[in-house]
Image (tube, rainbow over all chains, first blue to last red):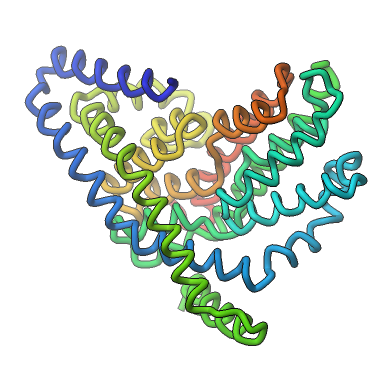
Amino acid sequence: MAMAWIWAILVVISLLFGLLNGTMGAVSRAAMEGAAAAVDLAVGMAGSLCLWSGVMALMERCGLAAALARLFRPVLRLLLPRAGRDGETAAALSANLSANLLGLGNAATPPGVRAARLMARGSGGVASDELCRLVVLNTASIQLLPTTAASLRAACGCAAPFDILPAVWLASALSVTAGLLAARLLGRIWR
Amino acid sequence: MELSVFVVPALLAGLALLALSRGVDVYSALTDGAGEGLTTVARILPSLVALLTAVYMFRASGAMGALTTFLSPVLAKLGIPPETAAIMLIRPLSGSGALAVAGEVMAAHGPDSYVGRVAAVMLGCSETTFYTVAVYFGAAGIRRSRYTIPAALTADLTGFMAAALAVRLFFGT
């Protein structure tokens, strides 16, 4: 429903500004241009998105997801000590984290949700500090290869779509850190 | 030669060798994954059509300019280019919406411009926050999410500020 509101508000505001600014002709043309641009964009991105989905599938089959999960298990224990002690929850958390790192959004959600269910047992509908932290981790992007952003850049005619890699890593690291710090601070006062 | 040009070829060749050494069929893994990618493209195309129609109208009417001007004093203090204001507003709500807006920003300013790069880094360092919170807490039967949303939005805002900072750091303005 949120999208219905956003779309309606964008279109109505465009109509109002078109009236006020006398730009109605441009607004009218822009509607069709936007629709056409969407197809250009999707077609332009399709090739690289498919390639990267293929690479992600290959990484998973090579056992890289499992290797990443082992590598990050100590970090998980540090971040989520209670959930990390329970075998079943820890396995789901590792699968969630490694799929996120590889940018496999669709593969990350099922184990993440399983972990959240296990962590919410007996909570009476109130999120525990660890569960809040898990969700904050999942709302902050921690993928190693920003393939969607790179595919979009390639579709826009960029010569080196991955030259933003170090910038994305730095921004992601700062963002995750800020989210976890905020969760820790707010957790003390927000019961 | 810049280091980043090695990332893609080295990754592809390295993965091919790793797969062969482990007896994984490289080719069918790639084609299976590519098929899934095509499904993703087909799934986001209808929302891109709806959203880019609205976003192009919004820009052509002058409303995007007004929004940018309105938010630029605050964004300038945070070190964020005001041209990316719309990306920040839609990113936590809709993934394809953010893709549409960022694509429009890159088309208007060029993918290798300062603004274009910041737009890409913003996409790469954030997630669809509200959707993720709804999925996780909905499935886990959580009614009181406590501080999750403020903390997640703090992460998003920090990511946006860090995106601008990191692009300035690595590429200049």
